[in-house]
Image (cartoon, rainbow, N blue to C red; front, side):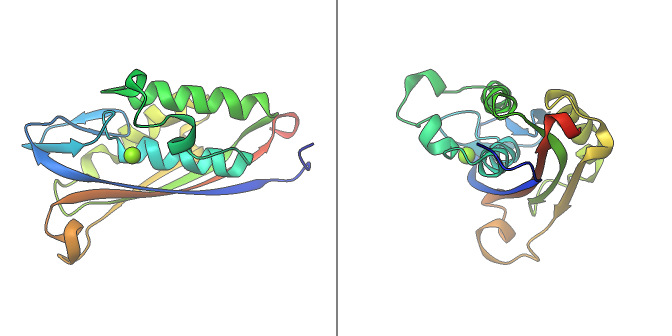
Length: 165
Ligand code: MG
């Protein structure tokens, strides 16, 4: 039985940037000459967010629930994955308190997309846009992210009992 208190979850994901792939972040197609490589659409934002939701709900991580050896998730739209995660969260009697995300990307510049991304995520989680915060940071040119070889995302999610929402 869930304890009737807010529950916090942390999620993190990183994928490699490669030429000839569409760049999908937070479910949005971002114009850029490279995209993230992975089994699914490699949307690091929705993967980190989904893992934070699962962590807060005390459920297994997305690697366990949606294995990258499963052909069902090949090229999959991560919005479907997030929807399935959110169905399981709701099943546990939990809903969103708030979510805070940091996208770690040297390129492209993401500030024009932050608000649109937050609005889209809010809609998928049946929440208000004020409950979602999306931030973007460069890696100060350091490491793989700083060289523009990868994009990562860190997400923190607070879930609250549905009855208190
Ligand atoms: Mg991933």
